[in-house]
Amino acid sequence: MHAAQSNTVPVPFDVIIAGCGPTGAMLAAELRLHDVRVLVLEKETEPVSYVRIVGLHIRSIELMAMRGLLDRIAARARKRPAAGFFAAINKPVPEGLDSAHTYLLGIPQPVIVDLLEEHAIALGAQVRHGCAVAGLEQDDDGVTVRLADGQFLRTRYLVGCDGARSTVRKLLGVGFPGEPSRSETLMGEMAVGVPQEEIAAKVAEFGETNRRFDFRPAGAGVYRVVVPGAEVSDRAEPPTLNDFKQQLYAIAGTDFGVHSPRWLSRFGDATRVAERYRAGRVLLAGDAAHIHPPIGGQGLNLGVQDAVNLGWKLAAQVRGWAPENLLDTYEAERHPVAEDVVDNTRAQMELLSTEPGAQAVRRLLTELMDFNEVNRHLLEKITAIGIRYDFGAGPDLLGRRLRDIDVKQGRLYDLLHRGRGLLLDRTECLTVGGWADRVDHLADSTVVIDAPGVLLRPDGHVAWIGDDQQDLDAHLARWFGEPTG
Image (cartoon, one colour):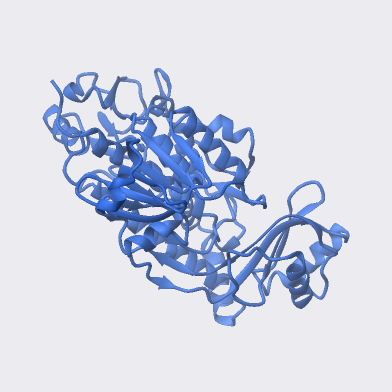
């Protein structure tokens, strides 16, 4: 440690983030909302060579609206109905979804990464490309980070957002238990050389017996192709067009004349969750903390939601007003969410199996999803709007996020752009008192909520419901520390 400190660059950082994917960029922006000095280290010097389309689900769309990003993202995305996500079982959008944003946004991954990185930089974050973490040592005051080029940096906290093969997680020695990949699926977008009618006929013929085989139009004569892989390979190496042709022949007896790929990728069905999300002053988020098959499109969303949960809590720790154990609630709240995503992706992968038993279960579930309650429950699980954190006994709304609603100043989410807490006060008699530097107050007797008063955390989750000032003060202290003045 002494040798490391002697070479430390004298540039103070409150937080260094390893990895500038969606999770790292979103976390940097969340920290900058609270004037935390942030440096993001991204080992890649250039964007990825393939353009994979990813989907923002309802909860992530809500978070983007909360931070004033939704219009910019929607302008670069394709909107589609929020349906057909669970094991690709085609059902309509369920009735009664508790959100003002009941759709999915499909967007190229490099575009969402660029938008979030630009957002973080605009807020004052520093981003350095071509910088890889190679070592770390922590003490009571901070973390010394060694880069691959031999440079040393000093920070109060380090967050590993550096993906499934996380260097930070490995350097910490945090276990990553779970199941290795047993199968592989190829996915990409490419042009085809046969008529649409032939494709539709083959999909109808083989899609019913092999759920991991699919062709879907992706615009301008391009199709999104999904086909089982021949074996489990190194996911770091993208497949070739010839790999697709061989597997298409094996499954359907034709390669459909595929050519001119936009992007090609492979994924396995490994499922792992880190044993812990924090070790001292080092934390994990996104794929560094959990991996699972991409079925249902939950991965990017899970990471972005980690970032918004962690950001304000880590900022509170840095700024000195965090209540005791606030930072520990990050793992307490997000680890079970990751476990649930791992479970539902395992279930979905089983439902894609060609085995007779799995197909029988799929047929049964397909029937059950005709019940709106079942369809809605599964969609709320996939899109994360069904999450309820354990804040203790109370009404069902306690611990859930509050949907975007009309308020006298416009829309609720427009009031959350600064990443502060918010008291919605229908009684017009409550106050945030000595927490006004951290929590905004909207007195509005017309707001349509089934409660006299609601305290929202910066991530939009309901932390308190009631009309008693003394009880409110206790909950303000629980989530936002001691009052000032």
